[in-house]
Image 1 (cartoon, rainbow, N blue to C red):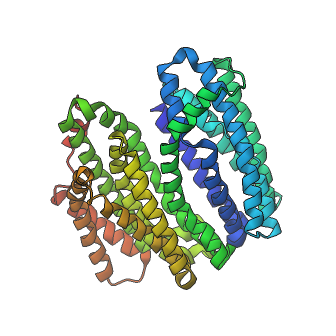
Image 2: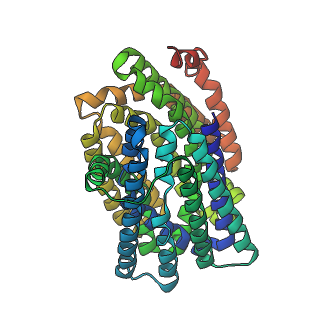
Image 3: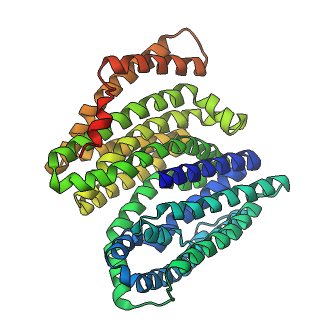
Length: 458
């Protein structure tokens, strides 16, 4: 529970920071912030390469070798961080970024060699001390929020925000190193055999994570070059609004994943029953959120980010239904990970990512941020459909459809009622849709209190 609370507080601090930045910077400078942040986030995967999961496993299995494992992982992280920072600087030149964006990029790249958070999380997870990780990460989130507040007070530009971010990264990196050093007397070394193990075994997981991230973030990079920073700022607000709700499937999987992993081989029937319940209740939670975002997107954007972001409402509507697919994907993708279907996951993710990029280039010139959001939804739907092609993955997605049907039907009833309601107020339509949904879903058998006891049954 402490780890879950820490994750929730960390997310809340991140959302508050995004809101403060959007209001402080305005759409154009917030667009620069979002673009540079996205580019560095993508490059950051080249400094991690899936090492976290491998390191967690090795630290849990070989506790006596913790010092040697951490020494190699930390040294490798610094080397990769410096290398990728240089690569990013060259990439910025090739992209012909304006001077402000390029200065922001250089400042953000400076934090890459200091990103010890994932390696620290691997250690704390292996010791079942995840709350210790979130204590430090929460300090980092809150301190950055405070620095953003100071930037706002001093009326700093987006460059000032990135200076504050680099200073914060230095402090948080030092805190993680100090916390690890207090527990393990590690050094800084690179042993070829251990480096090969970390890179080779983490590569598939890291590549999978990179593909997922490209699919979710590449639209902001393309939008920046095709439509400009201001439209990226509008779109980033829509993305932040819908992604803020992503804490729900993360929280569910934090508890459900260990239960699924434990039952996978020992009790296949219980394994299936548990993931089916995950589908049922994540669908039940996602549909009303999507209805609210669809009908009241403009009002929500104005409430959270300010009136100048209301024009991103169509993107919010599109992305809210992608959020539904993401809620369900949190279950079936983890099922496939437990079943070790790494190559297939990488293959499907590659197809979806390439489709997403192609649709962005096709639709953004005409439809702008709405085209970017639509490309995300269509590519995600295609990926979902591809899982029906393979016999050994078809069962899970078929269960997904079966368990989500009640929520989908109740959502359709709510949506039709809202459209037919004689009002032009988005908030009223959202209230009508949600009310009809919450009334219809129990009547269809979509809510069963006994299921809570079933999923935790041993």
